[in-house]
Each structure stands twice: as structure tokens, then as C-alpha cells.
Image 1 (cartoon, one colour):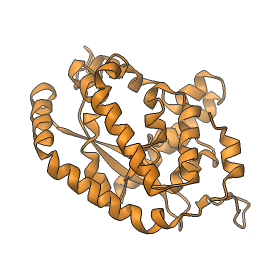
Image 2 (tube, helix red, strand yellow; image 1 turned 90 degrees about the horizontal axis):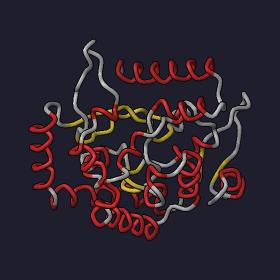
Image 3 (cartoon, one colour; image 1 turned 135 degrees about the vertical axis):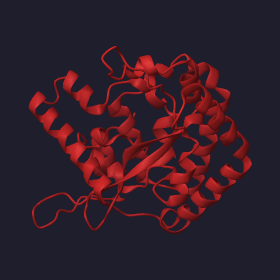
Amino acid sequence: MPDKTDIIENSSAVKSETDGEGKMLLQRKMGFYEKYIKRAFDIICALLAMIVFCWLYLIIAILVRIRLGKPVIFKQARPGMIDKKTGKEKIFYLCKFRTMTEAVDKNGRLLSDRERLGRFGKLLRAASLDEIPEAFNILKGDMSVIGPRPQLVRDMVFMSDEQRMRHTAKPGLSGLAQVNGRNAVTWEEKINWDLKYIEKVTFLGDVRLIFKTVMQAFICAKKEENKAEVDLALDYGDALLKEGKVTREKYDELQQYAKELINAQNEE
């Protein structure tokens, strides 16, 4: 397993410059493929997927509407690629098929994610079928087919500048972390794989990851079904708090900051 520090220090693609205030500039050199070809490749892949699997989109949409109700599409704020002008991640809304019910307790409060995720939702997640609407995010330009998987905004705010280097690449539908354990790996391992990916982004590398993703999603779906609950693992901040790596005061402060980022995006 690659060490995060080694990846950052040894990668010739990473710039560790600082601005006038001594703050680290999160920049990275991009190769010819990533800079000029990857976007066209993403558009072609997304369009082909939508055309070839239009029938699958329709079937899943109908099943979600019948089993889980409205809305069929679930949208959630996620951190995207870092804007070179602001030095901050662009917040966008990820599109997925809904996998949870709106079940509430006797006081009208939503039940836990684990209680609202039924067998149907687990099946969608195990086969990654809930993620196919992300093709629209790819066409829009917020995402790529392959790249670091976009985490939650409340995960991002707990990341160090070194870890946020993963956001110098456009977030992906799949990536190194997904084909090397998916949600079964720890947060540290997941981020390490993302940092490993941005060291060298190549066409052949992306094609290999697409092939591995398809193999895992459609051939290994039954095997993963029994581990679908891993999708409900602790958020990054919760994991750090549980491990004593962040204080309760800092935890509350960063959680509030995450809410402010999302609210600011909603107001734009």
C-alpha cells in the first residue's frame, strides 16, 4: 500500500508552492491526455452508456418509483475539482438513483440509514446501478469516468491540504480506490489510492480501470451484496472523532463549515 507522504513528496506532478500568506497552493501538472483528451473521452463514454443502456435507466427508474416512491433521482452536494482561481473545491450536485425510503419514527424523525436501506436498495448499491445517473454529471463536466470518487462535503472539510490534492483531478464515477476494495478499505487507504491515481493519469490506465469496474459491478455483484452495509461506514470526520484524532470542538466547527459551504452553493 503506498504511503500518502511518499506519494506527495515523490510525485513530480505535484506542486508544493505557497502563496504570499504561506498557504499551500493545491496545484498539479497535468499530462497531455488529462489536459486535452480526457474530457472528450468522458463525453463519448457517457453518451454511449446512456444510449446503450437507456432501457436499463427506464427499468430502474420505474422500480425505484414503485418500491421507494418519489423522487426517483437523489441529489447530494459533493466537492468537485479545485478552482485554480479561488483555490477551493467547486461544490456540485451528484445524481444517483434513490436507494432509501423516507421511513420515520413515531416522532416524525427519519430512521437511520441502515434501517431505511432495504434489500432493493442494497442490490442497487452492490451492482453500482444506483450510480449510473452520474453519466449526466459527466456530460455536464462536473465529473469524469475515472478519477477520485467524490466524497461528501462533510468529509472534505476534515482532509488536510495533502489529502485535498485528490481534488486537483476531476472526481470520477470509479477509480483506483473502487477497484482496490471499494468501501471495504479504510479512509487512509482510500485517500492513498486517490493520491496514487493523480501521480500519472493515462488513457490506458483509465481504460484498465473502466474494465475492472465493469467486472466488479456485473460479475461480482452477488458477492458484494452481502457486504453492501459497508456503504454505511462512518463519515471521515466521525471516524477521526472516534479514533481521537480530532477534538469534539474541532469536529463541530468543521461540520458547521460544511453546512455553510452547501448553503452558499444553494444561494448561488
